[in-house]
Image 1 (cartoon, rainbow, N blue to C red):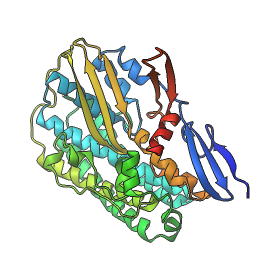
Image 2 (image 1 turned 90 degrees about the vertical axis):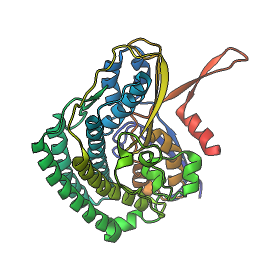
Image 3 (image 1 turned 120 degrees about the vertical axis):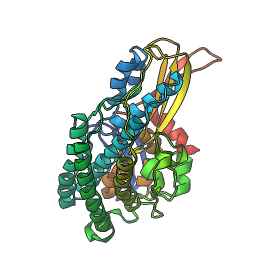
Image 4 (image 1 turned 90 degrees about the horizontal axis):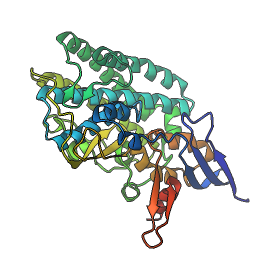
Length: 387
């Protein structure tokens, strides 16, 4: 049978953001895959170099809607490191709590989407119903259901009141119970198992070679989590397990996310028990001293890296962002290769892609000829896959 090639996107009912995937198939089997992104490039890095640090905080928060708190945490972490400012202890605990609230929100959203991708609409409805609990908690604490604007340079914007603590404990206890239920469904429900077991396989060794991060990496048995490997905030003072799975498929990545919801609930409970009284902000200079710093956090999709360089003014000279989806794209193309066409949606969705925060282009300077050319991300992906 002759091999055929067909595109998916950039506009496609299965895609929540515009991206262009191209597949070569032999009958029902995918023999090769490629990707062309760049449809929602917003020049946020460049824009950060034209605005002051406070304005950049709002820009970075909008790199990604579901990971907005992770982005502000990483940005503030890098800038605070350059400025030599240590935020109050209570603010560190509140930042941790927001970090885990957002992890619960993101993983439950993904689980519902996964159910939708495989036609398990009942799972989608139940998970998104339960997700309203964490949405209500986020709204109570920050005033917003998205883009919470809690993290600010020098601390956090709002404190946690005793009344909030009571409601948080009640909500988290409910969500933990529901996450245990969904972990049971993921391992026993025939509908779910038939569409996830041995689908989208990739080994831990290949994940490491291709630079995969987060649940994608841990779902293939590699226990790397920034919260443990490079502790920030107060993560070295709380107990939690780095969840991994040896299944190396869509089911493994699902189980990692569901179990991380349980762990996030436990971390939040510990934070509420340990959080001291005190200030939630400290004075922060308008102009940041000259210097540079790198910060990394464990966002919901994996390791998020920020590089910030200051020239001593109130405007950063350079802000560079490496998002988890960018790191996971080479692995995602390998996952779909060798599988069935029908498994493309759930396999690709298993990395929890976000393209609005991923779009990149690189300008290469030829030092010999003095010429410059733009290398698109697909070219960089192919370079990575060859290594």
